[in-house]
Image (cartoon, rainbow, N blue to C red):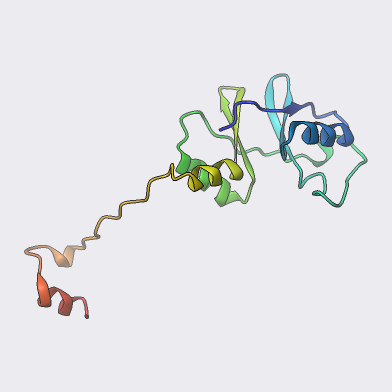
Length: 145
């Protein structure tokens, strides 16, 4: 999670928002009104890096229904929230106050550094397999091998 969160007001012009993204070196801005997160503005909302949307305000193009996480949200939960909704960032809020932001880049960085541990899969047992377990050739034959 990045704790240095850049935010803008909904009535800010799109040119000013783009300039803030460029100087801040980020692709997402939180949109806040009266201290509460009311939206997210992404580079994609501004037309990406090539096509430039210039007219209007942040409120005209921002994402309104913001999916947020709490500081207690796990890495896996954050990844599933991002993946399940095809979004690029997840504001982290404590109560009504934004305390950070998690992006897909943050998660890829963690994965690349090996922070996330592999999932240990347990063997699935069904009711029909209760009782003594088969071993050796008998177990392979029971599984079709």
